[in-house]
Image (cartoon, rainbow, N blue to C red; front, side):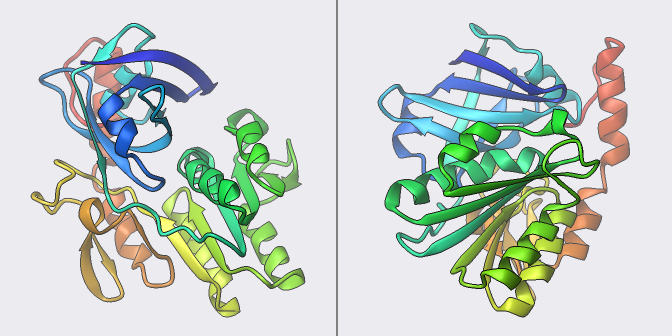
Length: 280
């Protein structure tokens, strides 16, 4: 069993948990994820490792409540335990040890961007970060990102904090005015990552995105997490989750991500009403 030792509410639908998982913490690297079950009859869900502390034996995950399982996980408290916490899974991010990198996080995507920015910052990379959300209330990990960035830009769709607009506005401006970026790392909603890749492509800047499609086992056996990258089928759990954003077929990924929206909504509503439900 994996005990939850700390919980923070980052915004009304996003919760942060620190979980006691010594073996996972010992081997975790930025870019990897874990497969979690909240009870023995529950489904497995993939969650990006948002931070890890090998000395303390802890792993940090950030959960956005979307369907039944994430809602139930979001309701758990310190002292509760998870029966399954499998990882670390996925290919660690190929992070540079020098130069200048722009880290872009949208919504809950700020959480998986953070360990990458932190690792590069500690190696001496010049990290410039751009984070955004629909409103100021929904921004997460702002101070954590500020601490690992030479400069942090904040955007909100409604203008309630920072730049009134999208993260791509700042990305485009920085690339046009400064130009000298070695890489861009973008994590967030698929449409956001697609937009960032479109902005960076004319500048010829290598752009990494992190994909989080439907997964069943997280070990490459089921094939549910397949995506098309560079015209070839890839599996996020064993080939990713990070891919070249200029080669990802985002239109296909977006269609597949929307396949079970109705079922997820139904499952969460049934959960609220005390029913069994299903879905993530």
